[in-house]
Structures are given as C-alpha cells and as structure tokens.
Length: 267
Image (cartoon, rainbow, N blue to C red; front, side, top):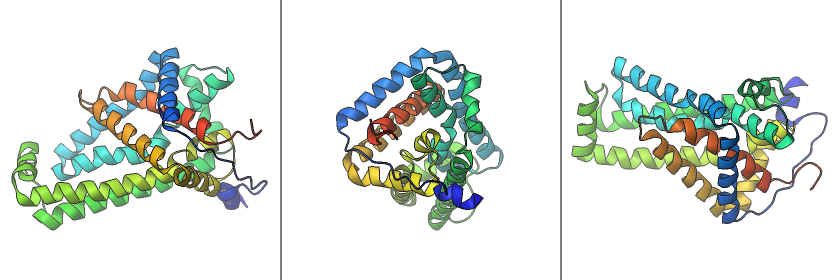
C-alpha cells in the first residue's frame, strides 16, 4: 500500500483541473519570481550558491579524471535534475504565499512533507534520466572520436571546433540533449510544485504536468527556452550568476504552477 500511495495516493485519486495559459502568464510568473526573490535575497542566494558550487565541482572532477568530453553534458545535464534540486525554493514560495516563516532554514522543512516519498520517487526518475544522458553523451563522443579523452580542455575545444567530427558531435549532441530536456520539461514542469502543494502521488503529478504541456504546447516550449537561456546567462560569469538565476526560476516555476493548475478548492 505504501508503494501505491507513492504512485497515486491510495486515499483519494483526485485529478487536478488545469488551465490554458498565455504568454503573459510566463512573464507574470517571472515577475513574481523576481519579486519573491527580493523579499529574501540573501537567504535565497545562499541556497542558490549550491548550484555554482556543484558546477565548479563537476569541472574539477572532469579535469582530474581527464574526462573533458563529459564536462558540457554534466553541466547541461545538471538542469535535468534541477526541478528536484529546486525543492527548497518551491517551499520558500509556498511559505511566502501562506505567510509562514521564510527563514532559509525553514525551507528544509520540505523534507517533512507527507508527499516527500512521491517527490523522492520523481527525484530518482530524474537521476536515472541524467545518468542515461551522460551514457548517451559518452557514446556519441566515442562514435566520432573513439575511446579516450583529449589531455587538456583546450585540446578538447580545438577538437570539437576545428574538425568535421566535432561539428557533427555538436549537432547530434545538442539534438539528442534537446530531446532529453523536452522529456523532463513535459513531465516535470508542474509535478514537484503540485506534490508539495497537494499529496496526490507521483503518477498523477506527472500526468498533470503532461496535460498542462499538451494543453499549452507553445507556452511550455517557450518557458523551456526561457529557462535554458537564463541558465546559460547564469553560467557565463563562472557559474556565479546561477546563485541568482536559479532561485528566481524556482520561484517563477511555483507561480507558473499556480497559473496552470486550478487549486484544490477550485478558486
């Protein structure tokens, strides 16, 4: 019964009602995310520092293990597990909305939520997708350049930018990476905020996210492009910008959920 509850919530099989959203909802969600960020900027920047720190650790790991071809897939693929890692930020959004304590330590009360098992199941799913992406990226690289790795980052960059194999690697790598990102976006755009708000089970959360995507394909695709563009901008100043970009996007995602899914009371 525990497993069934995690998947669907055995006590009630509510199917949330969804709305059609417009492009103004996307800009509105971003504006609200920025507003919420500035209510507690120091606390959220502290939480957001986790992301550039992890990015730096990934860069050090690839250099130390001579795994330069995995550097970009690791950093870009990190966004695949971003919806789960942004969980404390969603909790801050929920608390600000309800007028609860918004000290940064309170954000970690999210791990006490009744739906955490369902949220953790989504986290495992995203981790599997992330792992498959890395294996796929390694396979693509070896298909063009064979096993092994260039000795330095500059040698790898030169290999990718100045050879025909490198150009094909970029084309196929970005195309397949886009498919991975599209899958995660469609299944996760509102899943975790929904579970944080209402303990409905993993299956219904994913189904609701897919329904939102299918009902608003252009809007959700645009949202994915906005998220990707802002994450790229955040990585430019040595990943430090992610300490601001990620919290703002986390807040904005919560508000997008509020705009796309009708509350339990129907108001």
